[in-house]
Length: 111
Length: 114
Image (cartoon, rainbow over all chains, first blue to last red; front, side, top):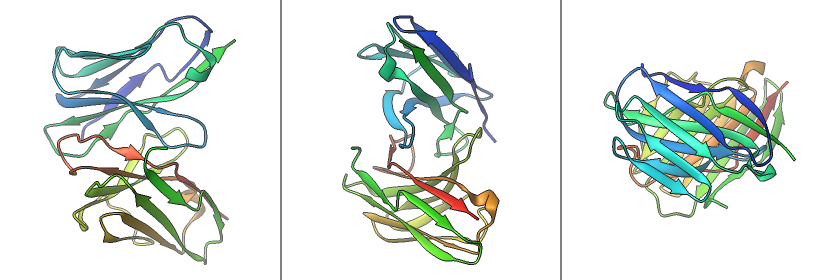
C-alpha cells in the first residue's frame, strides 16, 4: 500500500525560530492535507493542497505541494508556544480514495 | 470546536465488558470514519461509512462493530477487547468519502483496556 514518511519525528526549538517539516510518498499523490493535533484532542485541518506546485498560506503557516507530487512541506514562521503539538501530513493517491497519514512531527517550543 | 463530537472522552473497560463509542457530526456531511491512534504509529483507518453504507473495513477484528444509523451518527461497539486495543479512537466526517475530501475530526475517546 501507499506509505508516507514524515520528518523529522520531533523538533525542539526556541520561540521565534522558523520550523520546517516534510512528507514524502512512495507514489504520486493528488491531494495533500496538513493537520495539527493538540494533546488530548483530535487533529485539526490547517491547510489543504490540490495541485502540484501549489503554495498555500494560513497565517504563519505555509505549505507546498511538491512538483513531483510525491512530497509536501509545511513551514511555520516565528514559532510561538501555542504551536506546540503534533503535525500530521495526509495524502490521497491514485490507488484509492482514502487518506494515508504520516507518522507525525512532534513540535516543542521553548519560550 | 470542529462540529464533530465524541462520547465518552475517556473509557476504561475490562476485557469481558461491552461498551459503545458514540460520534455525532453537525456539519451536514455524508461520510463518517473511525480511526485508531496508537502511540508512535500513524493513524489507522478502521471503517468508512458513506451515505450510511459501509464502504471500507480495513481488516478490523470482529470485536469492533460499527453502526451508522443515519448520516449524523456513528457508533463503535466494543466487546471482548484486548489490552493492545488501548488507544485513542477518533471519529471524522467529510462531504463525500473520496477525492481526498477534507475530513474533520472529533476530539477522540481515550480507551484503556485492562
